Image: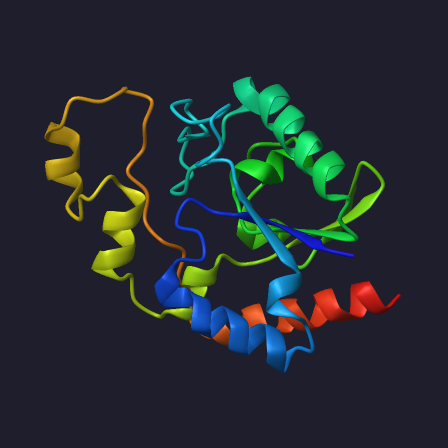
Length: 189
């Protein structure tokens, strides 16, 4: 059975593909067994403010106003693919398992196994976490070709759009590898 992978805004680009495949193989997973989906690339959600910033929190989170649409889109993907496991690398999809905006962060939910429509739902780090520094190339990929926030803000755009940066942490490769091994254990149960 396939694994439904909900990617973040950056996704698993060609530059990350070889890293992803080698990490999957090392964890005993077939990298071709994943069905990649992105809320940022789906026609039903494109152009909508998927992430918002509020309060003192430094990182953006899901937009509670569109969680009904997100639930419908992800529900359609589940029905279409019939996955054995759902793996989430996306802040927006966290709203499906943790409705509290302040708690629904990758830091708080990572490693947690939840239930969505009767299917195990594992929260993991985005692929960019394998880097210890934010790549200008990744920043551009996530922000319509802009690396600099000031230049990005000068462009005419929807005021609800956010300038976002890739997720990076120390020892990210190890953490993501541990999450992949956990996926293998969940599939073996």
